[in-house]
Length: 358
Image (cartoon, rainbow, N blue to C red; front, side, top):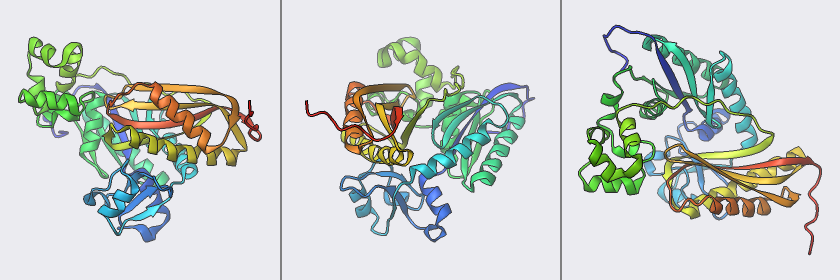
């Protein structure tokens, strides 16, 4: 896609960077005996779920959000490593320091994934800048990262997914629609399994076929948001990179390899996150008044819910119950979810108060 012979003129480019199998890669980096083995990052509880799987584990069907017992059945030689969120946050700070060093706008999607606004450049310049950032990330963390470069966020994200692991793919301005056309329509933001099934019943299987629909057909099939989805199918995505605002809190989140609709799996992930956050609060000798969840849908829209506790806590069970309450208030109703996070805020130094009996 980067080999176009047209005369290049500057365009506004965005890059999507994503560390390959982040948690598992950190584990392998720090324990070379794991190299080449199928590795899963998961807790030790009876209902633990896989947070991340190494690329060696994926051919067996092991993937994020899968119950650990199923992962062990699918891959008997699976090496399970407990998560180390404190270490991941340290590495994440190193990653985002590289993203920010040139002063570009950075929109974090998770601990290891971000959009970076590259600015008005030629395609060749944008590609070289992304390549330089990838090299700097490896030098800083010894982790490989895949990157996609395009004029819009969605195409950049799909490009980075398409060249994993350890790849770089740049899509030239004007080539977006051709790049997307042969891909399954489910690769588009906002199209979950139900919408994909509906489109399939009308013989629309690829992004290119959706892009060719006329106004009447797209409204009939997809309703009020049909025109927006058709624009995305044509590679038209005006969304800007939105820099994050730092908050005084502790959070953990998981981006799923495959979108998750099953509430039970989401609750299992919240349980693991509550245990992690309780450990972080213990290390910080702090308690939290506020518990919240962050949910990123398949179309990258974000829903947040939080609740304020009468008495602060760092007890994993209370954090978990509050997080489940927030999740159910989000009203997802089977919506495909790509990221789920739990956050503790309104932190106070000291020990938790005893919960009142009355």
